[in-house]
Length: 316
Image 1 (tube, helix red, strand yellow):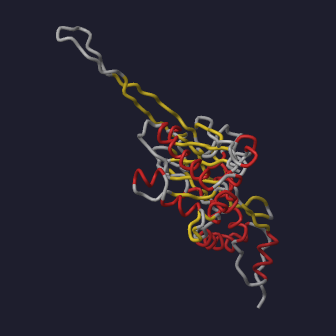
Image 2 (cartoon, helix red, strand yellow; image 1 turned 90 degrees about the vertical axis):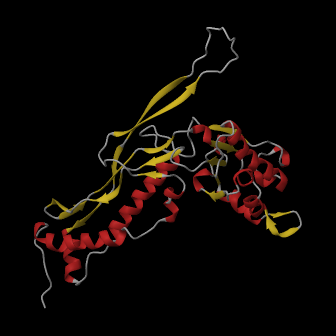
Image 3 (tube, one colour; image 1 turned 45 degrees about the vertical axis):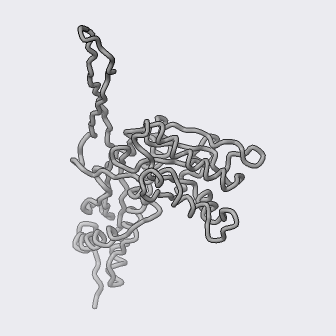
């Protein structure tokens, strides 16, 4: 049987299009845990894909109650302050292409076009979104979860070996103190109105805590003890989320390791993704090639309540 041959890109459309639809069904089933920003930051996809951005308002009460005379005319009044904030969205993209040669070779071999290029495009898109979510982008002057200038940042006490701040140089009791102080300072910084439910650490720090015994108890490590004995659990009775984040390895002052504590709630922070990465229909780019454009729109990470986030530098 004579294999199919296509003289130009236009004649190959019937072969390319079914492959494109098959790829769509395949690649959206794949997960990339290493770029899983959604489990750390609430992702907001609501609204129009093509909106210019999002607008939100905040209000606060103002005024002070005072003692009065029964015949006084100096009644204090309460008032409300209102602020308005805008966050713009930007278009980004990553796609792929097929050449006439690739199409004809696949047809001659009796096989469908593979999804490798589409899968690679999807993975690169997720990698970009993860980077924007965590660190922001200088091109758009955005910051991310780990480097927002509005978040209070402190340095761990320098009372480890040789006056070091790194937790690896400290005793288990000192590590427990620093860890709980991170959560407690965030709680006190909000006048005890909100407490962090998530703590992110550099991987080496988390690994050390998971493998370092607490005293002579063979089965009890620093991490295991902390999961049951921390300021958040003591206050709420709920389990504290403790995870590693590779972006924190050098995020602190002087490229030191940074720990982040925050309340994981859309009220506190959110990652704007009105248009998740998606592929457009294939089109004839030239007489010998096809292009499949992949586009997405994002506004990056927005920390709306910076007092509910806290940084601790020098932990590694």
